[in-house]
Length: 297
Image (tube, rainbow, N blue to C red):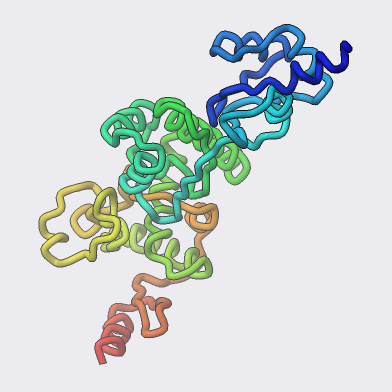
């Protein structure tokens, strides 16, 4: 009779949310949390939950909104995390990535931009190029804070690994250089050569004159024109201002960072995209003019 009663008890249907947040802690604490949220559970449910297995933690997605009590308790231990994914590709700017987050999670873009400015030390290049799985029902503050703080921890770990120390200002100067390399190089193989051109031009007090730097912020996908070069007064205009901008112009890959730190040893000062889509690197302006003529012809 007791067994029949228990089976009937567990078969009682429960109405639940499709997405449920489960806090970390004891089974008793989880049941108490769900009770507080309005779920009709009791102390005996904690007993059955312990028999079934360890509950998940965080946001989880249930198979249905109407489940028997037994199915609901089982789902707490087996359901997958409720996540949505966003991808930041190497070279993309924060301007477009934040808009992807706002669209994916139905956030207000102005709030997202304000939160990013609150947590990030630079307007771009802080969040690593990667695919991020983020909690479906997390609030904007949690999403942006998580992306920025986790990326800053990765920056620090990478700097310690590659340099042996972490100095935020010096490190993000490397990231600024890497962001130009990321946009200018046709592939990973070219990155150390682009880096060498940057270093060689700086050593000769030559302006970098690299369009990639001008593809910052909302200009990431806009072709650089002579008019834009004349009128852009930002630090990213490497035609007007010497050296590397203080701020990264976009996201970077690990390969671009390594190239910025360890450029190839060359005397190259120029490079020109050829008909195959890669670049021809040369040391003299005369050779560079020949490459320009090849492409035009």
